[in-house]
Amino acid sequence: MKETTFVDITEYFMQAASQLAVGEMIHSQDFSLQRTLTAVLVGDPFFDKTYAFKNPNWIPCERLNDDDDTLLMDLMCTVISQFTSWLDGKSFVLTVYSCDCLRHLQSLTNRKWRNFLLLVVKACQSVDQCIIDAQVVEEEDFVLCRPLLESILWSEVETDYLSAQQFVESHWNESNKLWNKPLQFFYYFCQILDCILNKPPSRKESLQDIICATKHTLNAISFESLSVQVSHHENVLQSAAPYDTFSATQKRLCDLLSELEECLNFIPKCVVQVETCNHLFPFLWNIFYFNRTKRHILTRSILYLKLCTNSRRHRYDSFTKETTWSSSMWLRNMGWKVWQSHVKEWELDSISKVNYIVHRLDYLIQDIFHVLCLNRGKQRRRLLNLLSFVEPLYMQSIGNKEETAATNPLSLFIQELGFMISIQHLLLGFDCDLYDSSEFSAVYFVLGQLYECWSNIVMRYSSSIFSWQNHQPQQQQLWNKWIVVSSKMYRASCLLWEWEQQQCCTREQSDEIFRVSPLAYEIRFFTLANYRFIPGHRIAYSLFHEEIVEPIAQSFSSMENIRKYWLEPLVGLFESIKKMLEYIVKEENSFYFMDSKKEWLRWSIHHLVYLTKTKSIEVGIV
Image 1 (tube, rainbow, N blue to C red):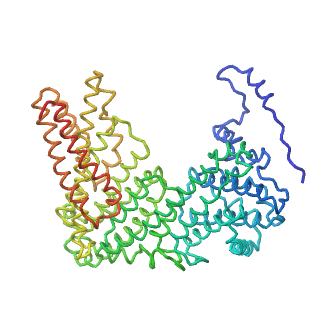
Image 2 (image 1 turned 90 degrees about the horizontal axis):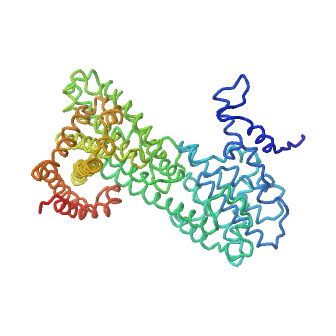
């Protein structure tokens, strides 16, 4: 087959383009927007595989001398840098796959180099497998290696992997060899992923011990002391990897390993909390708060595989001996039999209708688990879509009379689930930087209203009483107080932010720059306001204007109004928040998302007291 050659036409193109006036273009009669968008991809290394290979391969396929350990270390560390760059979301073509030796593995004569590349391929395959099994593949975050690697693998590749592992084990104690540590690093990395994929490890250490050993091995690679530096491949590293030195690569990999270690420590704690309190909502909040900090796609995949899947094989699992979440657990924990016995009281049509609603809830909850492990942008969009499934279930659960919703545990549970999803959707808007500063007070107001509606349910009706273990009243009380304090904190935040906004409006003598308009408010919360399980009047702009905007606007007219409409309500909220936060901070057996926030809560207690005194002095009230 004749090789394709490329001709540089840039100069001809620029000469022709210089003759066009601004706004003119040359196109054929079949020109369309679709063709234009397709043309944009040409020349983009991420999409255009041919363009990606226009540069010569940065790792040569020449034979390496068995004694040339310096060049071998140079190549190994470059591969590690490109592997890390791929994990960070760079194109697999421009990183790991640009090594020409990968396509000639069987012909390589240097055993150290060949075994190293075999372990690299194994690591790439395992990363792909974790992400594909968890079904959290996102093209904007990560590029799978499978389509390209499948073209270079052969039938006996598994046997070669085992040979590569045996080679590393046989040279394990040769610490004086420079090439030994890179081989051990990928050996450990493959062990970690094998354990995650429920395969028995070849070594007896725990997974946490393997991760610690991996980090220790990675930090032991002293590449900067060699004569051949990463700058030997400077051009490629600048275009494909964000690392100027191998130390930056080591730091990024150590951060990822620490994140995996944090995830693996989080999983058993989360499982214990599920088993002790038997409640769904704290479990979902734990996952939500864990992923609110920007987690790597591999971490989120592991979290979903270990906590949320209920249909996968569990040949070996060192974290959860049984499936953490299943239909049987859901039916047992959420009091299905109790709900069935009260069908007549709820005026539902039949027990079969209850069965249908409960099983539909099971599918919905499994979807929530999956959505909470996606990236934050996609998670926010999908959570809003899930609310459209909550609405019909809520309407079916209240039966023929809507007033039965106030005493029906099933409909109240669905309503609480809807509040939780709505709150998570709004909070992710801050993480994704989607709100303008003029909208903050409105978003805080709606969050406070949703939490207040939720607190009314848990404090008055105890809708989820069947979900809590009888011997865990303290856990239930702690959960209820968290919902109440969240309602008050967002209400206080709304008052503070609206005060600052109106002060800005006064200084700038403008009502449009710093304040959200009624139309913008209605557009922002239009979807939430149309769901029946959310009291629409509670998040309407008229209530926001009546309770927040108008009173604070009046408070600027006199010192007495400041005290009446703004400072006294704020101080009352702060005192209540302070007492509840002190209770939560002192509680030893709190939930994970509370434990992770305890330092923030301690800061909040002191900050709220200080802020109250400061605001009192600002407005002249001592």
